[in-house]
Every structure is written in C-alpha cells, then in structure tokens.
Amino acid sequence: MPDENGYETVDLRIEERVAWLTLNRPDKLNALTPTTMTELRDIFTRVDDDEDVCVVVLRGAGERAFCAGMDLSWSEKLTPRERIEQGRLGEKTFAMMERLSVPVIAAVHGYAVGGGLELALAADFIIASDNAKMGLVEITLSARPPYRPKMTEDGDPDQPEFGGSAPGWGGVKRLPERIGKARAKELLFTGARIDAERALQVGLVNDVYPADEFDKRIGELAERIAAMNRYNLRLVKELVTYGYDWIEPHPS
Figure 1 (tube, helix red, strand yellow):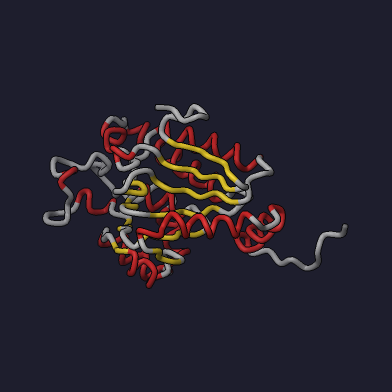
Figure 2 (cartoon, rainbow, N blue to C red):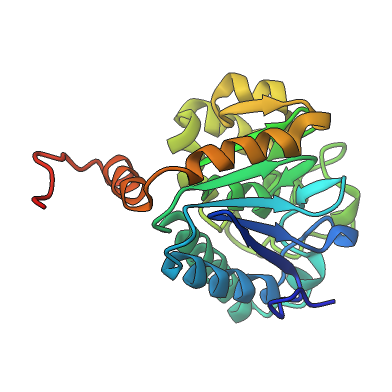
C-alpha cells in the first residue's frame, strides 16, 4: 500500500530535520526492484532540495532484514541488454545518495547482503544492530556446493556464459575504500556473511547497538546531527568526501 507520499516500496517521513527513509517490502526482506530504484531517486532529489532536512536515516522495515539485495524475480526476467542497464540503474541511484548534501546514516539490522550492503555502503557511515549479517555474497550464487545458496541451485541468472560476474552497484569500489583492499578481497572472494562484531572489527560499521536499543539510539544520533547547521554539514561532507583543503572561511 502506498505511503502518504504515494511511494509503493519505500516510506518517507520527515520529522524534526530528520528524513526517515524506510525500505518497505518486509515480506520480501526489502529486496530492491525497479520501482524501488525509481522511488529512491525521487526521494534523493526531494530531500537534497529540502532545507529543513539535515540528515537522512536509511533503514529497512520488519524484523528480519535491512535489505536482501536485488529481487531475484527482477533478475531472472532480464534480457542481456536489460542486465547491463540494471547495473547502470543501481550504480546511478546509489551514487545519487552518496552525493546528497546532507549526511546519510545506514541503520542496518538483520540481513544486509548483496545489493543491500552496496546500498548501505553508499551512506556516509553504517550503524549496525547486534543481529546484523552483512556481505557481498554475489560470488556464491554460481559457486560449487556447499557454498552455493538454495535460491540459485538451478542456475545463477547473473552468471554469463562467458566471462565473469561481480557486484555491480558500486560495492567493489566502496568496500575497499571503507575497509582496505586486502580485507575487501577476502570478503569478495569468499562471499562470506559476517556478523556485526566482525563488521565493527574490520571497520565496515562505525558502531554496534543492542537490538532492543537500536531504534532509540539511532534516533538519538540522528537528533544530534540534525541539530547542526545544515550548511556546515554540507561543507564538512564535501571537504571530507572530496579531499578539499579549506584555506580560509567564506567572507560574510
């Protein structure tokens, strides 16, 4: 059912300078569809232009997952040409979020795998619940048993007849930037899912909150950031993201 803004797969609520953006397909573990991508792009444009928004919190509905990645029913139907275009669609959508003027927090609970983790990696940082399980698992979809998951035991729709397949929505770029090349290669080569403690250890997430306190503490963090001057947040984000040197302040 569409939310108050007319979105079918996401929910947007803006309160006290915080944009709460929730992937809202809990029965499908919030898996991503073309509709989700379109709605996310619309929301990113909207919040970037809204001077009353100082921080975005991205999360997933339901108890089981932040996001289970690309909806397999979408992937199975793609023609070779469409497969190329879906890669571009995901990369462009996540890049829009990465370039938002205001900070973006990915609040990850449960499963954040494949494209779901790639989405979280496009946020400025990730905070995890202690029940989180994260990984770029795409390489396992065409692996030999016992590492191949049941959902692709009859064949991986993303594996071409010739050549290779890899995460296509920015994860192979953003994961090494976050945790370093060697650790990123280990996770990408094995397709392993790691728990929140391991994610904190390798630097994938900034902090881990207990599941029963997760929403409250995420709210407190968002409230603190939202109290800051929006233009200072934008300036600091640009300076850090792009490695600028701020030689002198703007005159006023």
